[in-house]
Image (cartoon, rainbow, N blue to C red):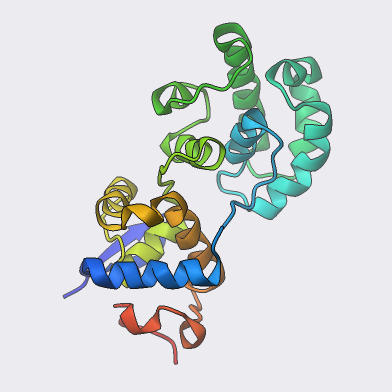
Length: 227
C-alpha cells in the first residue's frame, strides 16, 4: 500500500524505491532529452544567485527574473546592494510575494558578506546557511549551480516527482535529498535535481500530470496516471 504524504498542502503518494537499473534508465532518458539542464533563475555571479534564490521562496522563477533584471544592473555586489538601501531594493522587488521580509534578509546577508567575508560569497553549506533567508535548499542551489557541487536542492516539484515515481521517495525533503544522493548513479548526480525539477514543473504537474507524453511513464509507480 502506498503511503500518503503532504508537503505544503500537496498530497503525494509515497511509492516504493525503484531499483538501480531502472533509475539509471530514467536518468539516461532525462539526459538524452536535455543533456545540460539549467536552473531558470537569472544571475550574473554567485552573489546575485544567492539573492535570486532567496527571493524565489514562494514565488515563481519567472516573477523573480522580471524583478531582478533591473535590480542586478545596479546592485550586483553586496556593497552595491547596501548602497541601494532597503527602500531602493523594495522598489525593485515589490511584485514578489513577502517582499518586505525578503528585502530585510537581503540587506542583512549583504552586510554580513561585506563585514565577515570581504564581499565574497562563501562556498560551504554551513556558511551559506548562516546567512539570513538562506536555508538548506538555497545553499544547495548555489553550491550546485555556481560551484558545480552535486548538491540536491529539494523543492515541491522534486518531492512530488520523487515520491510519485519511486525515483527518490521520502517522507520529508531531507529524506528525499538523501534518497537522490544514495540511489541516483554518480554520473547523473550533478544535474539530478535540475532534471527532476524541470520534469515536475513541465510534465509531472501537481494537478494535471502529462502522463501520456511522459518519457519515463513505463517506470513510474504513480497509480493515478492520466490517460
